[in-house]
Image (tube, rainbow, N blue to C red; front, top):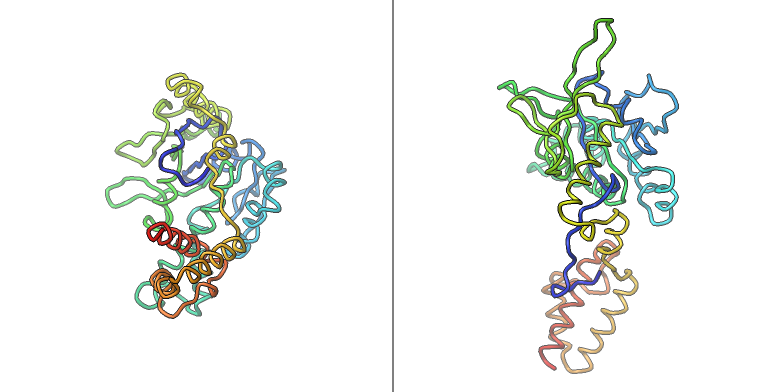
Length: 328
């Protein structure tokens, strides 16, 4: 897909669980981990203990945020993502508040402080928010069904929501989630055996939940992987029937159609150099330098831009092209 406001892409209903982001929360013993283990080809990223009672899981223990970065590089990296996508359909991250703690610890150690609040002017909170979201965003865009597991907390009014930093981790995750399911424990049966939890997809005056699927049932009486998957698929198929099959696509089809083609760092360097030389040849060297100064900052050369500054390089190229068009 090119950058062209005159040829926008039409939205599609994405079929299946590919690319879906799901948040599930509830107290211990409500079946979060057990039922997630039955989703399609899951990989557990274990930020805390919680899978010890379940055998046969593909699980990676994460003790430091740098562990997550390494695993995430393999899950999303250009040279490994194809193999990873063949092995795993679902990535389960357990749990949100444990992830948050490791991200905070990572920033504190990097900045040489013992508390995030010690970083002057409140900048520590923004640093850890960026560290957290850089990794989460990469994973969520890679095409897996990402499942975030959370713990509940009750506020002063008795309302139940997800434990964690509401502003920097919880709210960004839940606002991006296609479903936020609250698991309501149902106790035990007459024989003393645990009963499956109820899974709620609609908020009540007692707890937080939500869904992007307008056609989904407000809850399922028994939270099992099979029932959960069926509720989502049924909602998608109902939506598909309403909008027409021509307005649906698999995640890979949608991703391919909407993929933005970007030039490499080397290609951008070469294009900047070519346009800069062209401006000088046409007698606009001084104007070129002013454009560079405005875009890059006073005293910074275009040639000094680094690999993590490709967005500035792209914008500078557009500045050069626009100037040449104006003086043509």
